[in-house]
Length: 314
Image (cartoon, rainbow, N blue to C red; front, side):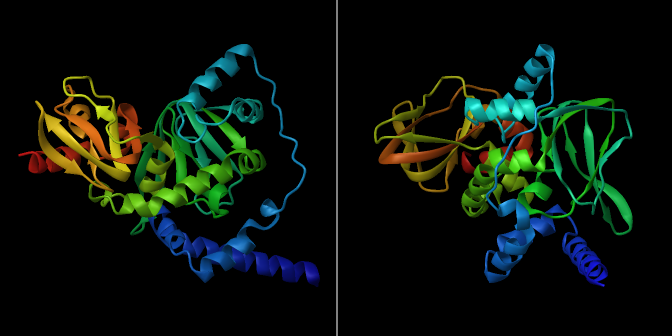
């Protein structure tokens, strides 16, 4: 019967997808291969979601108190904070509040995913089976987004996610995400993945961690002669030079030069001190990727950065 054949094909495809997605790192590594195979898979995977169609976003009623809380949560989220006001309001209306007790399983590895989550309060552990045992590979806290991989790449859930304490999160459906957020997030991740992988400081990050970092990047431009950081001032950003060149001067004397892929500004953030030097653009216009202090400490291995800094500035 045609229905049985379709079901069999669907079951086989699901089994193949689940086998392919062993964990987040392996899944992202597969995505890095952008050859013909990926194009072919993408054409099938996105299916109906890639077709242009009329979209009416869902609206879930909220109190003013809920809306204010949700604005605060999304305002601190990499994926949503840069939406324009009209898009931001659509997302606010479409999200639903969830309260979870300790031990509640919100995502199960291998399931199909049609929802992503943003954490307002609480802690969630992401676990995968390693050598026959379930092990926590990532812990998510307030402001973090999880479940987006299944929506971005139409893949089965890559991990099981469990609340470890009483938690509040907000859910967003696939269709709203696809129409409002997906394209911008996917394009940004794809654009910066290769570049970030070549930055020595970030070489130990796995592809999923780099994708999270790509979401957090802010692009800044500066002309030749522009001062990016000033010696003695408080530091609240870390910079990676994407285009152009710059030099660092301490007490007026040049002490470092920076080219594409180089980074600076980390000392003030890891040591909680003022800027040790002034950095000036020498070849412009320059393009810089910046990360704020809070994000820097949350996403990057500060101990490894401190070690590298000691060796570099000895």
